[in-house]
Length: 146
Image 1 (tube, rainbow, N blue to C red):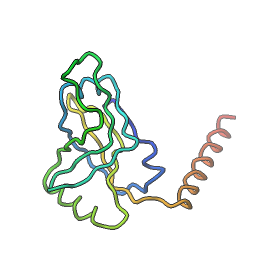
Image 2: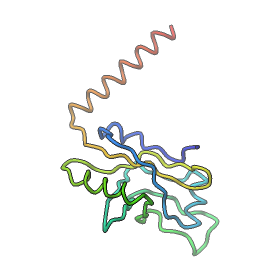
Image 3: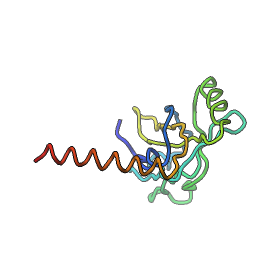
């Protein structure tokens, strides 16, 4: 499972609570662009609308060899999940402050998958704490190397 794109900022901006693996409904040119690793999920988010999960603001670059049959780079894409999982998501996203964030985009076999996480936004104090932990971890690793 080679990653196409990672959202490293997601763990910095949000406390990630639960994660789900979802399939995506894609066109042929989108799949070819993903195979070339031409995707950005940094600003992406997911919503539940009419019992379906949709992925927004994920940029999949147009495939250069395609002519007029190319896709729109930031169109909303439908995510494929089991009905029970979607019902759980509906209940959890109703809570105030919770959002669905894509954390990883990858291929599993020949199918493109996206990992979405339920996250609660961090305030500035939590972000400073995350930075402090990361710096302490780096210092410990540096001291072991010496």
